[in-house]
Each structure stands twice: as C-alpha cells, then as structure tokens.
Image 1 (cartoon, one colour):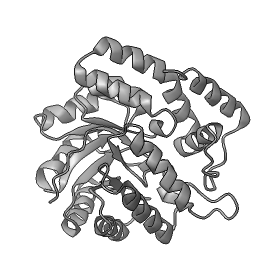
Image 2: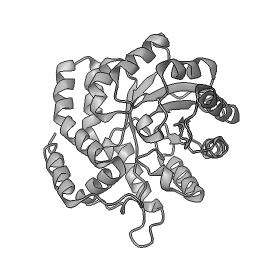
Image 3: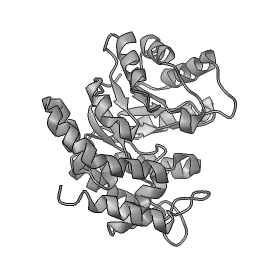
Length: 297
C-alpha cells in the first residue's frame, strides 16, 4: 500500500460546468486546482459533495477524476471521492482513481435502503480488496442517510488494512473524542464539519476537509498553522473571524454557495447542476458581506 501522509487543509474543488451546454469544464477545473494548490492547501479532494459527484454521469466522473489528478501533478496528495449507491460502481471508481494516480480514495456509504453494520463493513472491505491505495472512511449522515457510530468506524480501521483515515462530519465533537479514544490515537481523523474546525483541532484532528479554500484559502491555513504551533489565542481569533463565512456557506449549500462566491470573485464556474439552483439574490448579498469581512486578512 502507498505511504502518503495526509494532514492539514484538504481542499474540495467544485466541479465547473460550461456556461452554454452544462458539460464539465476541464480548463476551468484546471485553473481552480492551480489556485488551490498555489494558495497553501495541503491536499486536494475532488468529487465530494462539493464537487457535485452525485450529479455526474460515470463518464463525467471519470473525466473529473483523471483531470484533477493530472493537474495536481503530485504537487499535493489527492484523495478522490468514489462514493456510489452500489458497491460494484464504487469499486469501479476506486480502481479508476487508483489507475490515474490518486493517492487515496474517500468512501461515504450511500444507500436508498438503510444499511446494517455487516453490509457497511462488507462494502468497505470489498472496495479495499480491489485497490492498494489508502481509504478514508467518511461519515456524513446528513447527506448519506447512514450514521456510522465511532465503534464501527474504528472497527473498519482496525480490521481492513487499507482503511487508514477517518473524516467525521456529524458536527458532534464527542464523536471525534470517542474515535481518538477507541483507536488509542492511532487512526488520524479529519474534521468535515466547517463550524467545528477549532474544536476539532483541539480534539486532535489531523486536518480539516473543507470547501472554504475555494474562496478564502488563507484563512483555513492560518487556523491550522496556529493550532499546530499551539497558539490557541491566535487560533480562536482566526476562527471567530472566519465563523460567519463558514456558517454562510453551510446554510446555502456548499456547491451552490461556493459557485456564487467564485462568481463574486470574478471566477466563473457555471451554475450548479439541477435540481440544485443558483444562490438566491438575498443570499448572494449576505455572502458578499461575509467575504468582505475577511478582506485584508
């Protein structure tokens, strides 16, 4: 299995769509990835919920995965989100991601029917058997409808060799403490709940998986660096300055709000894919205001 260290700010790029025909806009994706790589991120994670993975055809998904890995070009580690309703297609995506050079894959168990723990375990084990790169277990019941308890998550990490990282996105800081306790601190966990970033680092998170760097790349990096240095006074100051923005992008929905924010920055990435709708004008004004509050920082 590859040995790549994942820490720090893991940035989720949106997936740009052509303004005229709605197809995936690879040149704009390339420019966006360059911005994220050059502005201090420590890793890139295409094809998560921010990247509208659920709304892409298999061909489009393959295009974004390959283009993203190629554009990063080993400048940073790349974690490709390979989640799918079926184990079969999740395996296909995982194998494709590995074949194009991804350093790891991220797996969110998604299902129309509620999965039991044995089904979840087999889903991860089957994916792990098909690839040699590390797997990040992703728990986000708000989007998947499946809530994995810390005991199950740590079991996955202990019993499946490829499972080496955890992304916890329930917004419950006690989950992170429990994961650290159950794993004896041996399994790195990442925060996936934006407003919980400060508490997560205080709980020992190895990093923060976030869409925020699409719009304010310097602020998440400042927070991480302050926490790494143990300067919690600075970390609190940075976090509370950043918090209104984090709350704003969560309230409006990440793909919708980030794409609106990029348009405000003069960087057009097209509209979100239906059924998602562009951000409403009052919310755009609110977003502009919170972005203005971070200028010059």
